[in-house]
Image (cartoon, rainbow, N blue to C red; front, side, top):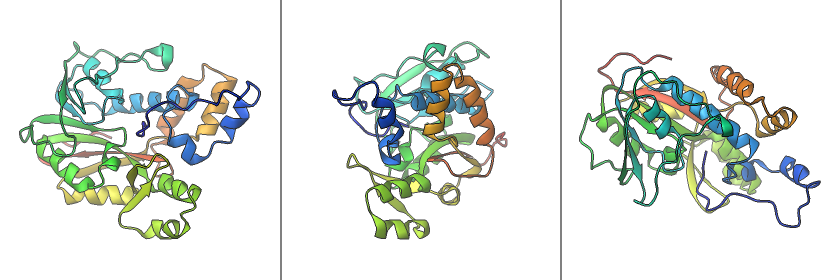
Length: 291
């Protein structure tokens, strides 16, 4: 996850080496997930899990993929290395996708099933895909919470359904109601919090002033079905808590791979306790998607 924040969180200059661990342990849920501290142990783990989930989801046959996830998303290089031709939408021409990560910082190179594909950056609006013809893509990546930041998620999914070929799939990651309720509680929004579990649409303010839309697994299924797509599955992106991951990596810096494997198995359950939900859906008319 990379919420809109202009800089990574850093401890104040007065914080000593002795107090920093305690400060990290006392971070609230809002502080943990509303910053862009991408070099922390938890975020290295988070992106390693996201990378492994994407590798499992990508089609086995070479295809054309549209990436709506923004310049901070690390999935486009993974798809290219796996042999797919990727069109990635950017807010401006100055922003370029980051190069694929390696084992040095937590990501393994993509297994080469075929020669690498191509990467084409395009400046455009990720809500209305009017620059693309219908039935143009085999897959769409809507990761990095992009559909939660598009508050009219149905409109965005309608456009995704239009540009997908029959049998094409979309992979999406959204904020969960679990995260939304934690954010509301930590901002003392108690009336809103009492209404949250029954809300048809839950919009949650973030500490940085932005607003995102949070979902239950059932709500994801509803919006997917309403636009004519078929839901394959919904899973939590991560189940392990940030404090657990940081504690285990502090004890053993080589435990990242084991934690990722543990997470992949845990996320196959029906327990939607994660702060983000990952879902796969497909456009009718093609072969069924594998789990």
